[in-house]
Image 1 (cartoon, rainbow, N blue to C red):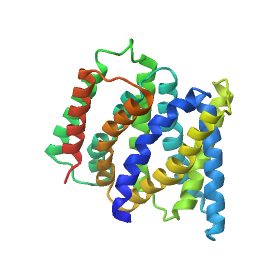
Image 2: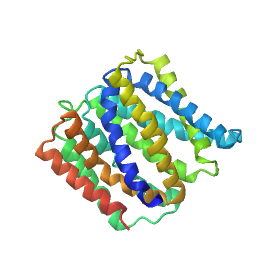
Image 3: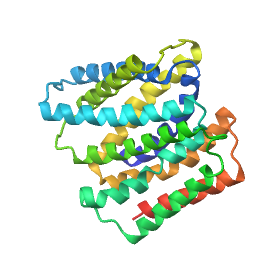
Image 4: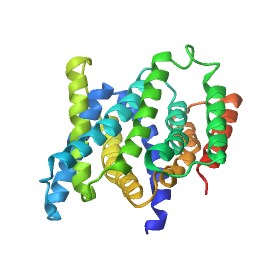
Length: 282
């Protein structure tokens, strides 16, 4: 079963980009994320109690898990949700944040002591060339500049969170760690709502179905698999599976959201995928 975890993760993680659109069409992105992670935190809390895992942890472990949640559930998902809410195409958002593997590989050497090769640097170059092809002619027109900045913030956040998670000194059970990360994400978005947003949620059928998908399949399923893989493998090896997500997300966006991709976009996707593959393969 463990061997198919990466495949399950790719399908679930890619599908999250698709259900993001119907959520932000019916809510403020930050209110939706606060709502989501309130229930995610409650779910992991109840699961921890059910399995007799203590949620009483040291101050150090609390700060580590909380910070990881703010980075991952706060800045990363907040950046993605907000960018899509102001017009960033779903497939392009997926492409940008999935440059994470090349950045993680580049930083895992000096930070985690993992070996970074010339081949990985070639992959980094190809990855960014592909991104420039997709983005270079569209920024300010079909791609909003603020949306681009938000997605880049999300990219930096998920890269930092992955490396941070690998460096954590705690050996907390996954449900307990995930509980405190979800609390961190929830409080982050509550703060954003209070300070900056005008929150609203239309609890219609579309919103509830899409939100249920993200709570149960993505937050409980895909995120738990990701944390397990990071814990058991090197950071660079874990994020290598991300190179399949742009194409999978783009296909799902075409299939379910009727999003179009130009030939230049397809070329950019192709080059970026090759670059990430080269940078992360053994």
